[in-house]
Length: 113
Image (cartoon, rainbow, N blue to C red):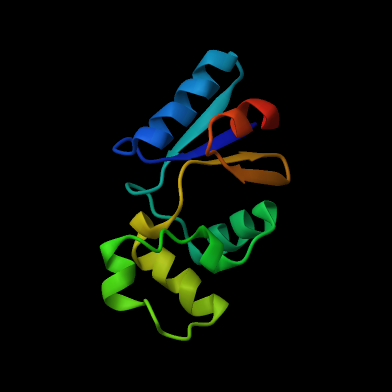
């Protein structure tokens, strides 16, 4: 089953959702701002993406700049920040089986699914 971690207010996330809808494949939508990911779910996504926590953070968000920028943070502390502030998580994230991608540009989604 394909899963998309989606923020309806984000144009790139909406574009990613449209690619999945156009594909005709079954998928699950997770509105992660409404239902924030747990620490374990974030760790699982990071493992599937094959990246470090900081690479999943939207470092241009004001929450990041005001609270975390310039601080030496561990993986666990960065994951905690994303758990507390889901808006910091890059989007959209597409998960399929044991792999995941950040779906920008949308061509990456087409290749992935």
